[in-house]
Length: 299
Ligand code: NDP
Image 1 (cartoon, rainbow, N blue to C red):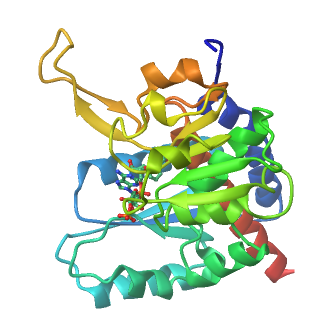
Image 2: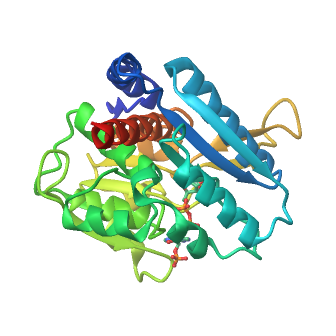
């Protein structure tokens, strides 16, 4: 093929932000400043960077951000107490716990304790169930961002075979739940694959739309992609690049061997600059949705 569309998350998220800003202003006019809470445990540099980015984006949009930083050795009991405080706070309308958590904390206990109406990551079982039955309060940020990339790039999904590589609770499973629903940007036939899938490339080659969330660079090579397919790369991997003039430098790559795959596709999202900016955008949108809910409950 050779001519493909580059699906740029920066440009597509920029189309969505004006609506979010408008909704923030509407809420403020009615006396509510949307608030996003973040609980960060430990000092993992990637998680810290991620939280900083969320704080910056909140500031840009006029959303209040409240970050609670806890040490790595925090007890589950204390963390649950902080979750309860956010559940009860009238200033924080939505909140999330930056994952991963240390091993001594049971992630499920923490997620179960979040008030589903404030669960802007959409991890609580009630919200996962709502997503599956097609009656969500929130859509999980990354899969929702992928759906927006497809819709806003005019990529038809109805009747298309969407193959998802990866079955995590954060990306793969909710992505499947979204694409199998009825409606715009969905109505797809969905196949979910994972590390135990046999003959993965036979399945990925059947994809009209291939969505990859594995966390390993170069998992998807050109021979695994059908000519003319759309490829969405969710993966974020930091690799050191010995070819660079500066040894020891590293760069971000996705799960797809972009350079060799791109010419086979009709459209492909890059890393960085593809799904990443959409995730944060959808998180901001969910925070506004949570604040709008709170306002409706006040009236
Ligand atoms: P997880 O590690 O939770 O899940 C990875 C999935 O990939 C698992 O289901 C695993 O299978 C599957 N897998 C692993 N190896 C293979 C293989 N060789 N072939 C097929 N499937 C395989 O990762 P996440 O879903 O949380 O994240 C995936 C990637 O997406 C990461 O790079 C992460 O950083 C990135 N990410 C990016 C976001 C963004 O905003 N852009 C947001 C969230 C994640 P099994 O279940 O059998 O182990």
